[in-house]
Amino acid sequence: MATNLQAPKGVAEYVPPNSAALLKIRDALLEASQLAGYQYVELPVFEDTQLYVRGVGEATDVVSKEMYTFEDRGGRSLTLRPEGTAGLVRSVIEHRLDRGALPVKLSYTGPFFRAERPQKGRYRQFYQFGVEAIGSQDPMLDAEVISVALAGIEAIGLKNCRLLVNTLGDAESREVYREKLVEYLADFDLDEATQERIKLNPLRVLDDKRPEMQEILKEAPKLSESLTPSAKERFDQVLASLDALSIAYEVDDRLVRGLDYYVHTTFEFVHDGLGAQAAVGGGGRYDGLLATLGGQDLGGIGFGMGIDRLILATEAENLGLADESPVDVFVLPLGEEAVIPGMKLAQDLRSHEVATGFAFDQRSVKSAMKSADRSGARFAVIIGEQELANSEVTVKDLRDGTQQNHSLDTLATWLKGEIQ
Ligand code: AMP
Image (cartoon, rainbow, N blue to C red; front, side, top):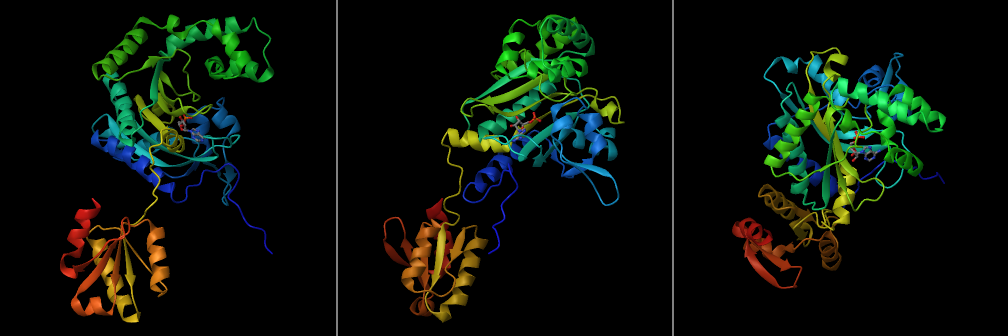
């Protein structure tokens, strides 16, 4: 016997009934972004490897350890996208979307790939929805981007997400801070990987979640104390904008996030019901990224929401987004002559936006009724010889077992009213 094939290790795979949660969450986020004027871009799933090396940063975990990189048949080095911003910015530059009205406001969604150690909420293929707004430095834009993520979270129905915000300051603030941090860390006996990280980008050490590092970092100098007056003023403006929009937040001065391109505002949404992988989404400002990738010197800000973790969050809050009953109505043809009229009836109901299933394989009434019950439908519509002759059907309410006859003419409208 052939061995059963399985999905590769660590990939997130969604099958019914839970797959409905993925669609609902994605659509809620997409709609929230569309209401704020963000337009959709469908991006390639793989890109030139150099895009991530240059755009995300060679020293980041994502680029140095987690990329799925391969050579194609033409000898080009390609990488399955580990994140969305670099690809979107590349697309903006390539299609000259930054030459029209600014800011350009775009969204994307789909699968992303990182060769991580799989665990709950951390997969090798996972799903994100993200937006990017490029070409404006207005602090109110930072607040808008955050408000779009929040509107999506609220539309999903989640109650227990918290917003963390921080600023990484401008280049000057970071330069001053970098020196202070390196000086502080020099007093400790750190492992080789951390030493290496300090050389490449010491701020990333703040991201280290290991308890022994957290202990060392407790007393570390704070970035907020090294901000230039203008960086501080900008952050204050962002916070004032959030206050004005009644958006609750906590300032978390350790929030640096894992990608090198961030400056000024960074933020993360965390959910307290998720354990170790608590971040359901995050983002920030990336004012140098366009220029780094060969575009104009324009700033941008965006977020990436992790749909997989949002699904887990909805489960933790018992929101019940899974689709236990894909149809509301189930049509049962009795006898051979009823099959075609039965399927035509199903088609007609569907065209009236009534989700309708059908008993295939001409089974006995009993087994067809069993399928109707299993489908989760509210009503079974039985169509047989006698019903055909009278242009009627028998409608059985599967909740209470009551049965009544209905004229075919008014059936769709009646059912629609009942199932709403
Ligand atoms: P990042 O680009 O790392 O900030 O990711 C943005 C969001 O995507 C995170 O807050 C997570 O919700 C989600 N995410 C990132 N990596 C993974 C992963 N390996 N598995 C599942 N979700 C992820």
